[in-house]
Amino acid sequence: MIKSSPEFELIARHFTRPARNAVLGVGDDCALIDVSNGMDLAVSTDTMVSGTHFFSDVDPETLGHKALAVNLSDMAAMGAMPYWAMLALTVPDVNHEWLGKFAKGFFDLAEEFGVSLIGGDTTKGPLTMTVTIMGEVPAGAALRRNGAKAGNDVWVSGNLGDAALAVAHRRGLLKLDEGDYMEAVMRLYEPAPRVKLGQALRGLATSAIDISDGLLADLDHICTLSKVGATVEADRLPVSAIGAKHVDSPTGLTAVVAGGDDYELCFTASPNARDSIEDLTDVLGVPLTRIGEIRKGKGVSLVDSDGKPIAVDGRGFDHFTAS
Image 1: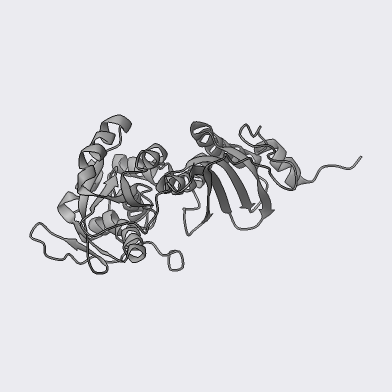
Image 2: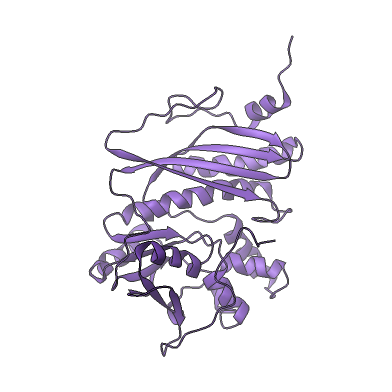
């Protein structure tokens, strides 16, 4: 009798589940999916590397959550409905206890959003995970980065900065109280993808992006593709009770506007849409805050209540300089 390889045993034990919304899922050379008529296929890939995107001592269940959550956030930014995911997982060794917890975090979130894992790969090496997510959006209705117009409002969902404050605490750049750190680190590792919000913004938002690398950097992506500039008012930035304790310090302000890992949505819309957007706060239970305005020109400016520019140390997360 030929024994199954450790790789196939690992996949069968931890990652083989029924693919309820695919023709064929895990177990063959390719997955098979059936895309609905009148829909565009939305596809995104994110890689997370130990030491670059997460600390090595992270709880594997929360890491499984985040591995999928960051991809769901990309679906949200396009106004898409997520359906299918593929996971390429590199691990130093086969630790079934660790893998079981990672799989639980991944599949719990997948179940919440109706996502099926339909394939991927496993191999040995430094801890790394790459998720490719696929979904559908009505043809021509996807939210994009290149639609912002001068005079549009700039909005963000939720609060900004908590995840980056947790990272700053770990790196000794500032000190959080123990309770604040535990709450902030959950924002770091268990972000809430704004999938329903993204879908609700179709037809309202003129552009959108998820905040993964920091507000100023990600808003600048919108501005670059839309060939416009933006002004953000610091006093309008939404922060939690934790962020409010630190936003007046240079490190705290940097965490809020340039720290990254928020996975909130930043979007633009006509002033005529303000009432409709504000109604979404009650409908979806997600705070939405108008923080600035799109203008003619280039770049993103952060200003105080008098309109004077505020200097920020750093503009956003860089995958090639982070450590």
